Image (cartoon, rainbow, N blue to C red; front, top):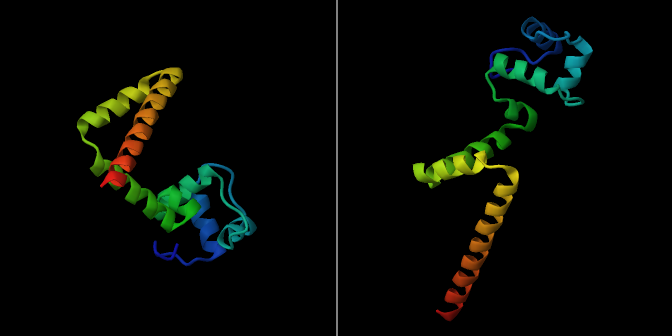
Length: 125
């Protein structure tokens, strides 16, 4: 709230939240418990808070460190695969679950054999 230019007080949170949320309004006591970390808003309320404060929902629920980890992992993932690999993953996700399970097992088997080959090659050198 402070980063968004608001005072982190229950009365401010109650007023600003209730003017933006289309569901049941929150009480002063309820938002005070949010601020003190005694309770967590449900997902719909987190969405309202996220839009109002300009903060990702995940960061509100799990903290800024968790958001940074997700962004780092996503950037690592995005930089690590090309468009052909993306096409393969998209095709994989469109398959029925039994076929996905079979393909997953095949890939894991290849990865396990490859890892063992790398270990034995390193041991010989």
